[in-house]
Image (cartoon, rainbow, N blue to C red):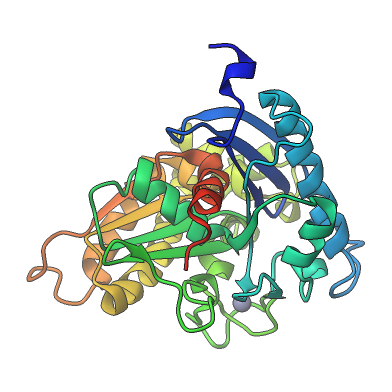
Amino acid sequence: VTAGARSGADVAFGVDIGGTKVLGVALDADDAVLAEARVATPHSAADPAEPSRGEVGGEVVDAVAQVVAALGREVHSGVGSHPPVGIGAPGMLDRRGVLRFSPNLQGAAGADIRALAGVRLPGTPLIVENDANCAALAEHRRGAARGADHVLMVTLGTGIGGGLISGGRVLMGAYGFAGEIGHMLVDPSGPPCPCGRRGCWERYASGGGLGRLAREAAYAGRLHEVVVLAGGDPELVRGEHVTRAALQGETGALAVMDELGWWVALGLANLTALLDPERIVLGGGLAEAGEMLLAPTRRAFADLVEGAGERPEVQIVPAALGERAGAVGAAMAARAGGLW
Ligand SMILES: [Zn+2]
């Protein structure tokens, strides 16, 4: 099949605005990935010089337009051809495509993503949806949630994203804000969160949360080898140092992974009380730790969930589509005209 033959109305583009990168894919009519493109997220959460609220929405959507242009070149969609584009954005995105609140992309909060994208991509059919809802759709159609109609999709990355499948459909809520699970409080006197409160679930159970749990253990003298990996200073310990040391069987690092699994399971048990899922899919960068995270999470979940012995086992499985899930789901949503 030549590139030219692949072009046409059946192609759809999806772009996922992440905490560190803007990742796009082009899907063919069978939802197979034809091309991928990425750029760094402007003013990501890791950027200390992050401008204040609302100022960088335009720059973020510029990055989306760059990714769409790159995808267009890859699949030769051609001048005058405008495949539908789905954009996945992190945080509380309302039905009109305005990003109302976004703790992990604060500079873009308040931005009218749909309007900004409409100016940059004239003539393009556009939809804007929550990124984790897009990931849930993709895993439900093509990934680890296939065949299950009641699913909790949790992405453990910079923060925690959530997508809920109930009765085979993505649960949106009244205003589009359903599934903002990372900011459920698990400890009202816990560490401060970028959302302005204290002790949110994602302070404990995300990549950033792992780094924080690890630094606590390092200062307590329980993570010598991890501190060496981080360059000798406990303050420099990050999540990836822990997962690397745990892979090598380092006891202190494995203990921190157990602790992380407990915090992940606490949120999953609470959400199971609400949603009664048959399957829980864990995605995001942290889920790449695999069984090192899944095994302690399953053990703790069995202790924490209500009536564990009386309910059918809730499967806790890794996501299948990896870092592309959000972009793939955004493209699927674009083809369908949105998630609503
Ligand atoms: Zn929070």
